[in-house]
Structure formats: C-alpha cells, structure tokens
Length: 172
Image (cartoon, rainbow, N blue to C red; front, side, top):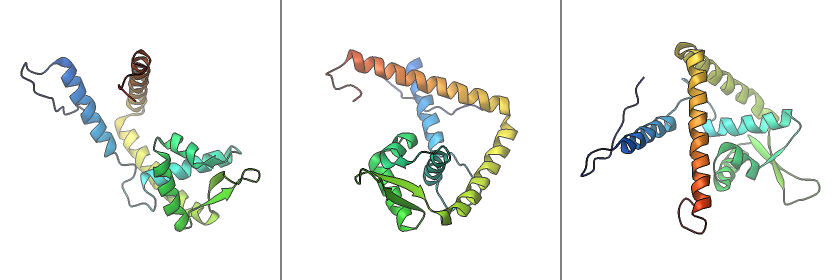
C-alpha cells in the first residue's frame, strides 16, 4: 500500500528530503481521517478515548483530573475542558471535588453511561478486529512498531534541537 506523496517543487527540482516531508504530510492527513468504527456511535473518537482513560484509571484505583486527561489524549487542557463541559451537560461524566483540595476536581463516568460506552466500545473493537484480520496481525504489529519508532525519533531529534537552540525561537 503506497502512500501518495505531494512534493514541493522548487527551482532546483525536488530533493529527497522534500519527498520525505511530502510523504509525512500525506501520512498525517490519512491519520486524521482514520475511522475506528463502520457504524454510528454515540461518542466520537476523542470522547470514547477519554471515557476509556477514565475507566481504565478507575479500574486501577486511580482518578483523573482534566490536566491528566489532556496529557493522555495529547490535546490541550482547554480542549479537554470543552469536552468535559459538553459531556457533563449530557450527564455522561461528572466532576467530583477532591476531599482535601477543593480546587481539584476528578472527572468520573456516570453509571448511566456505562451501557452506552460498552456498546460503542464493542462496535469499535469489532470493526478494528476485522480490519486487522484482513491487514494481517504481523503487518499491524510491524506498522505500529515502525510508527512508534519513527515518532520517538522525531521527538528525540526535536529535544536535541531545542537544547542546541535554547534561548532561540525554534520549536517552542
């Protein structure tokens, strides 16, 4: 399965690095359009991921606040706050103040939401299971390992550049 590349044309032609950047842009665009279900679900992808993180923490005996959810989901605290506000208005989650520090509020899933969440999760698990079965478990595992390795290297390189340019405007 080839990635369609859009390359930047320059006066001197297209360099190898420009082709790489085009390929990365194409992957990013496809990643943004990924589907985790073939049917309509009650919760969107981000909401489902958030509920999964909250419930996983609960099963481990932990509770999460919005800042922790933002980190786990890779989104801003503002985005999490908007999602939590919307879901709280729908009775999906509640904010529960900490017993000691009233400034801290844990986000918890309501009991009424669990059945709907389980239905959505089953729909997504069935869909992804079928896709991976067709793609091949070995291919899927390799793809994940390669993607993780590539992303880890990008983060490592960015940190190296940040250290070298401390005080500069690059990659803030």
